[in-house]
Image (cartoon, rainbow, N blue to C red; front, side, top):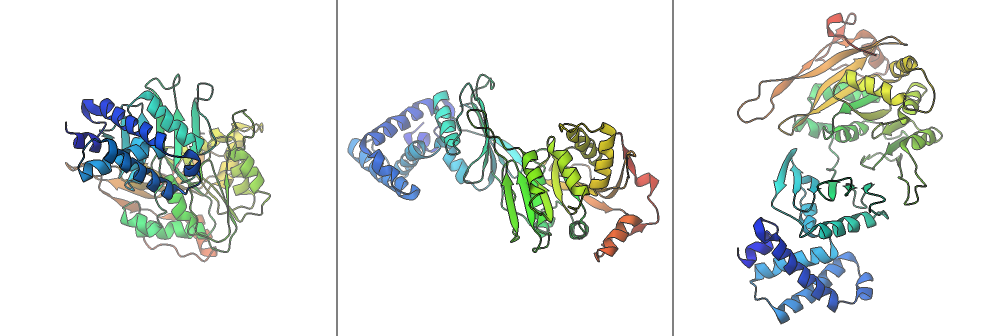
Length: 446
């Protein structure tokens, strides 16, 4: 393979180690000729320009003889290694990549448009990958070593990063960087096929009428994207408090307070949990509370807030169906240190939750609202769920693209009356059921 090809695709095939050595040699030469104290006083862009200029002089003086393209590629790679994140730099610069997955030094995957693909890239060594990981976690004042082999944090630029290293990771240091796309509006999600216009009108009516909404779905199904879009329907004069593990929501209203949990420090102290933030938010006079994801004892606090004057709140939960979401809320609520009977949690959920929006990520990478369901049970009775929208897929064709249509069903009269009292029009595609249709009402075991 030519030098130019090795520089352009350094980790492909068998020459990756050799080319990594080439980059390491010039990185060492570069570090010998720069003044680190002077470099630290420069802005990031100036620092990169200075390094590129110095490295250009070194290559001109000592060789090898390169074409303009080869020279530019080598300079970029060496400076990325010295200043940035090495082979990850071009991946982070690619706006089409939403997830970067490093499974040890020899295996790098990315997600584009919902599809995961392996790239012909590799780190020169296990040590180089660990140096990159240490550089990443140091930006958030964290450390990773055998005594602290897992790190989950948000980078200053907004990406969420997860690291797990040996001895826990058997294939070598593992790094996952999740990048969050720009905030989509509900009309834009219609264009992507995630929902239709009638569903938009219904969800808008629910949010404005202060229904409590749970967005449910699996990993990567688009829960945060939909939650962000729904939050845009909240009136601008209301005081909104968002609570997240890693700040991902991008609300556009003026009166927004963003709270983010904090992990323990290296001494194991200073942790602030989602539950701490939910409890504190109740003392901050919120009109609405938005929880990025409930996953533990804070679920009980959130349910109590929803049922005691904080109508119109939103939250997400990991689950695969509307019924599963309710059962999961019940299980998570029982994880609180408050000793509340499991059966009593049904009362909390029945009085707190109004709407479950179920999202699914399909085999072709598309993300769709597969169901909008209403919780119509009361007190401690068994959960009763009424679907009002469902996605009906067609058989998958040779193109492996998921096609189908959204089916709209009548709303229970009690829900239609609540929308009427709130002066919210009922979308014409739905209509009103005279009574809860037993055939269209599903019960969740609980």
